Length: 562
Image (cartoon, rainbow, N blue to C red; front, side):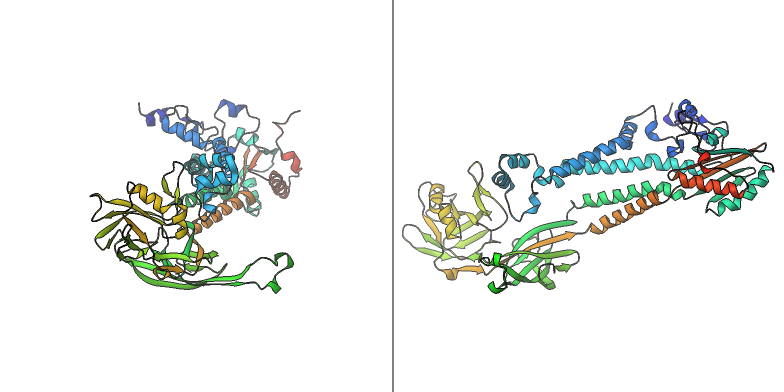
């Protein structure tokens, strides 16, 4: 037997004739309690109006079990708590993204000792981009969606199918109730009270001697509008991980060089950097011995690559798209890309060198070639020899195993490993390490390293003969490059969430039902909050109908203890 037929057979049909889905607590039409638990309640539980929800099915398949898990408010609270704990763990030490240029495997151990090293090994140094944190956000989003669908669709169906005459047990077991005899005809009494209730801004419907008055039903959807806002917010946060949607990096731009911004087709050139320092006369006494910048500025030119962008063998075709003098709090802005002044370094930066290939034994020079530090060629022809670039290191160092490694992307200690082919060399050539900076040659023992690579004999050498063969930039400016294409959606999600909060907190869904049977008026009323105002409204309406009643007496005391 199919699930659909089985569901139809086990549906609960009320005495009013309405067919209710299995699991319905209060009839969707007349409100009569259908379950034994509801029948035993002195005051009816009106949460979700007693509608049947998918999460309450008794015969569950795997999909229903997953649905029930995510539809649980308790599960949602646990997920939020776990996310908050994860967020707090991410603030114990600074995140990797907070730094310009570090090797996290070394930094955390050096700065924070063993605890910092454990912090790094656990992956907490990049908490907010870790798989488990993203998974928690996805699960919270799934919980929001399923929680909302599990409740809002059945609730909407129940509220749209309300019958005007309500079952007597429904009326007398509301939190606000009233019963009394009336002398006139029931339909006439109802017709007289309708304008008075409408004056309170209720939407009124009548059916003979029965009445249903309702206002501010839209407030019931406030929590679900809030959920929509949170879902939009979460999706926007997760979208930051997509390529091109979000960027927040710090990049050094040597003066005079057009440098590519990672993951984009934009190049930025530092066309000149100036810095002005405070005079000693202007400095406070406690800063007299310090040199502090008063103002620094980068004359920036932004280019867009239009051709040959990803072909290393060709020069990229650049088109200027923006110019701006970047100062602190005055960034360059172009179509969502922003470049903020962050820091500077007045130490000259190495751009290129022109070393000479020399015979180590005879001193014979075979020729010279220009080596671009940032963008070297794959192969150089020098006299009878060919130098093939095997490996480029921006920041040369040794890892834990003592092997050569690139410690960062910044050119702190550039190094190049060449395969040299030519006469008087083995057929498969020899490997040769070249360090452009003299200090790095001494620190990493270039000669000893190359003798070892050549099997105890170093037939060739690379050296710069004069400073005329060295190209330097006068300064390096560090810019904070930001791209955030999802921020508008974050604000939209926040705005939708705020609307939902206003709907839910500042408005109340109020309903008044009444019916007159054989001269007896029975009234029941419900609201999701602010019961005192509802009682006051009803007492005022009854007073206008010449029925004096203390508003406190309208409260149903069935469920109170004696």
